[in-house]
Length: 130
Image (tube, rainbow, N blue to C red):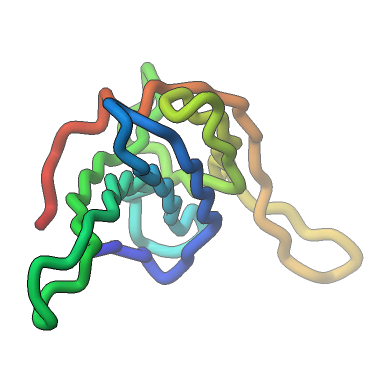
């Protein structure tokens, strides 16, 4: 369900109240700009705690949503979404790394990258995965 793409990068949790109910929003990022995988993803979990009605119930419900992150103008770029932070339960600020090439430094091959700072509204992630 979480689709790590060989590389979980960050997890951030925000607790908030909505209609007097305690909820959590969790954002998990992944990607692998160096490998063959092109998908960089942000998964949003909507978690709500409720009172148990029976011993079989957990008292916690959740829904998961996930979308790929792409560069405007270069949808095929290999990205890795690095650390991010939820701001005010909806806005998510993160850094995306793009593989741009390779270079040899002191006899060792290194991967060249560009960094992008981005902000999204987590509620724009609408693809349900559970």
